[in-house]
Length: 139
Image 1: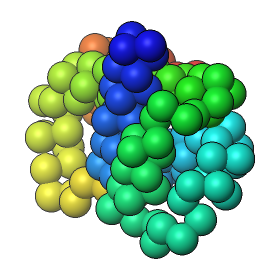
Image 2: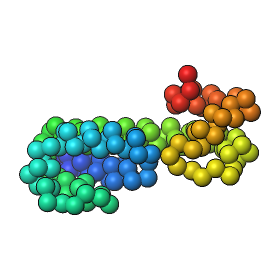
Image 3: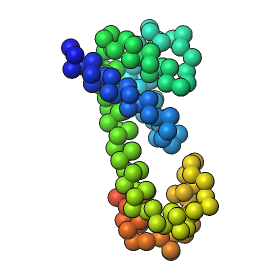
Image 4: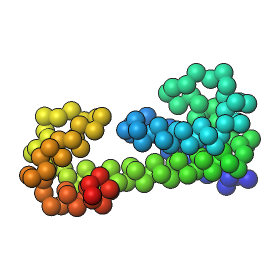
């Protein structure tokens, strides 16, 4: 039972990090949790005001009452989030010089840096282009 609670807690902590990832990626993960945990959300968290991780905190406080379906949705979303964070970290590492040189004046967020790299594709290094392919930003 302790192992199960630990896994749920780790998944919830990872999902709380959704605040810092791009909106479109976060929306899909949150929707997966909302669908998988519908019963729990309707039962335990219906009066919670969304935002700032309050819904996930509500689920965490009821972690001993979550269904297997909800636990899976939380775990799967956390695993996907972890992969997305690793891919982003890899991409930033491989494209750091290109981003500094070509996109230094571009504000991060809302896909602006990716658009800048795309706009400057002819000047982007092979290393950065390979990283983009590796994380499926480019075909």
